[in-house]
Image (cartoon, rainbow, N blue to C red; front, side, top):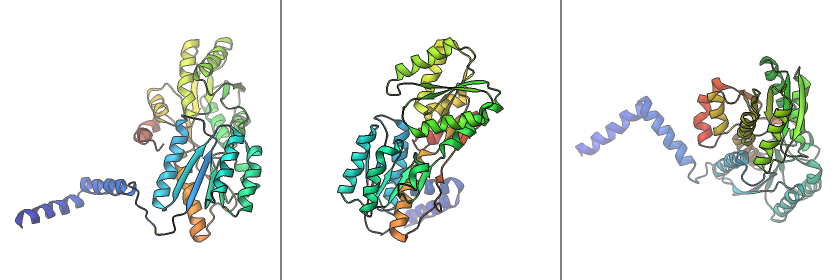
Length: 327
């Protein structure tokens, strides 16, 4: 009994200490990810269909956030993706045929998705758009949109380039036809006092991306800033810069572990974080709130998750989050 009492007392004292409190909090967080719901609402089925290609780490983070919210909200979560717009629309149709209780979808190429979303609306399935398509979301009948306004994000980049004294920038578009990418470059052009050139590359082949950027930097020595539109392309742009012997600063949209490391060591100038984990998490959570309580967040306007300019000063604080795949 004495040993048991001593053990209990030691646990009690640990819980009162800052270290013990942190351990308890870590244990609580770990438990929340073990598949136990925090609510007793019906086990609805939500489907998320994105325009992601295979192996895109950005969408791994979005999916991770959605899955964590699904655990908490007792949701059966289905994820599918295709970077071909018509195929993505067919995946939405398949979710409708399964009579899911809610749909989360990206609108990178909205024209191809319009009829599928109209069918979802006719079937009485609530839809939330995420990441891309904020301008079309309401028109297509979605409850709300979760993501960053791409034009505003681009404007933030243009302003940051001005503060850094840049004069000639190239905006690297790795997915032709993606309206969000065009809007980002539009925003940069709107606020940047210098000149912006758009460079279209084959985003499915990193060697092609690298050679295209390298060739541009070799032929135009006046370029002093390269802006990539996705975190995986930032490292490729750095290699292209080195191959071209350029002094251009490499900046990027989105964040991952490599980008955080590049910011920390000065390889990259800054990044624009749109918080993809939050996009996935909030999309599921908002659908659950609508099913449970008819709640709609945003008042008809997008629920913004970005932009946030990340620099070397912020990199260390975010490193742990990027390593675990939530930033």
